[in-house]
Length: 71
Image 1 (spheres, helix red, strand yellow):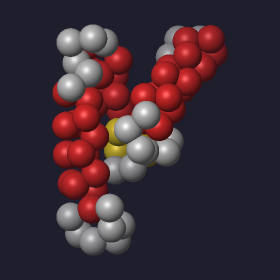
Image 2 (cartoon, helix red, strand yellow; image 1 turned 90 degrees about the vertical axis):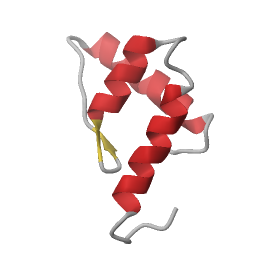
Image 3 (cartoon, one colour; image 1 turned 180 degrees about the vertical axis):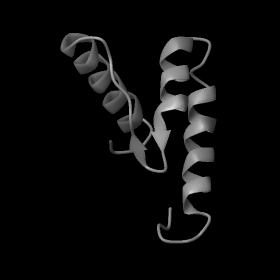
């Protein structure tokens, strides 16, 4: 993906949503959290405690890495 183009944020968002939609039936809450929490190329979210936050971080990083993204 070429960054710096006017359409880059839209293209990244569309790509992430496409990949996430394939995972929706398996983990609907995770997919919802991911879709709601991206701002351009940043994941902006949180959890009630550090343990849950760390679990979300690991799951997000692993899921994105398995699809060629680096968080």
